[in-house]
Image 1: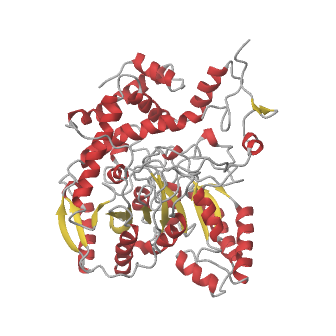
Image 2: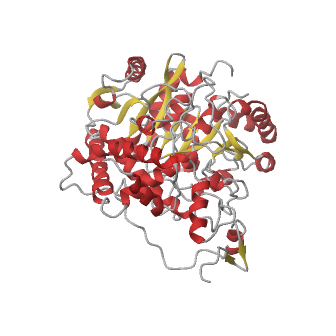
Image 3: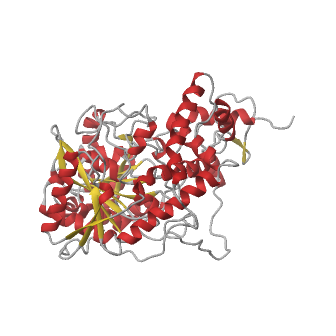
Length: 483
Length: 95
């Protein structure tokens, strides 16, 4: 049962093989038995999940079930869920129960899906290893000393351990794709503006984008069908038609032009990673794709540009946490200044404070032009590289990460080393492009992610290529040894 | 670019964060390392390049000026650390 995909579970529900209540109970039990090993969940909402499952069964009995009706899934704990704690893995929001639903949350509810819990993450989505959560680090099911990646590490670990068939995630610099790669699951970051950010707790607003994490591209397409769409309540949401992403999964790849950026395959790339990615590209070639080299010459500037822009935006966004209206408040403040300063200092963890300070510095008088403006200019150069490349190719392929999952604690003392973990994912956030990571090999017995980047709003084409790859290979069906 | 202890104290004050004691030395070192890394950007020629604020250069959509929200004061204040009679409570500012 736990190995079934969303698409298979939907068929099982339609055929009457099990009810949603039975399915929900099954996954709740599985989480209860196994999650102490992984710490993938911050909150498990048993009561509301069973109520939603009961309602889904009633809806199905009336003959008005949609594809998601009765399917259990989890939300990254960054999506506001009315009446259910939403912590962003921070002490600041440890007791926060939102008075409203995120648009993404509302859409899954309307589809009749069953939210079974909220997954662990790096605090405020700032991290690449899930070691910065106030609720403790997440363990990668592929090895107990390994990080699951971040920031959506709880969603990725829950999928890898088969605790849940699907989970939402968010990606500001790689936070869907990098953990998906390190845990051997499928994760899609959509085009910026494709999925509403309303009720998705903000980190860096010009980069943040919610998206699906699942075990197959087909399930990710089913999720994106729910998540995508214009939202008048998100001023950066884009008003553009949403196709049925499952409708084109079976198109053949004959003549699809795939570019390999030479900057992603430099000599310093781990040779075993390189060999696996090249083998995956060969597989796409066998399916009819035409491969050619492209160049993204400003790739090496993406991480430094990001570490100006993202902290600058985070320092502005996180100024709302003041201990007054919601969230953590320090004990016995002496005066208003003390209330602000101590609530923030006690409520935020180290990495969050570090980024707020970098951002505050970059935006402070006298430094704005040298840092923020400069980074925004470099951001356009990075985007222009992609625009030029997409004149020649339909998709860009490469590794999602420089290495497979690394050991817990191995990069926590050196923020810059941790930041470089996202070297292949960050440029697509800066450009606002969609990209997927799919399992595409193994190095030392650990999963390797293949990244496919598309042009703006080409999620259907990306999912099509990923689905065809998954039809031809079995990397996405591999599980950690003890699962 | 490296920064000094005084810079970190100023940044912390602007950001309403408290950084003190031994932590300040470590923070100064970490922020200097990060800023040193970011300094790669200074070598790039960006003359005549328009800064990019939005990935698809979208502009603000406007809506009709009509009331769309209902009054949610009670539910919003129910999650406040301290509120009374519809007001948020903070320590006394004016004696």
